[in-house]
Image 1 (tube, rainbow, N blue to C red):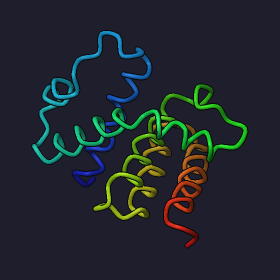
Image 2: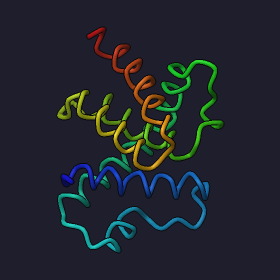
Image 3: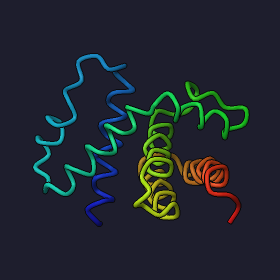
Length: 137
């Protein structure tokens, strides 16, 4: 498993914790990552994903609801919505990451940490957002 994949998984774990506990009694991301004994590259990328996702969460949530027909973000499984949030942060705000990479990574993480159907759900929403941002293709 690559360092960026590991960083995405740790970002998901932290974002899940924040969402589940509604920001109450959650240690800062830097402390959470320091406890994991990770190499600096993983810590840096994971912290970047977490901080960026949280900084843009309101806009990202609107994008999710616009792309997810008949779904309210509050009704989505916590794992799925946080996979979507961090992947959308990558798609929209990280120009150095190819969209296909962000989408593929999110699909694989969804298959690993959520239900068997989550990969298709995540793929559909991310493809819609990618098309809105970059056009068809």
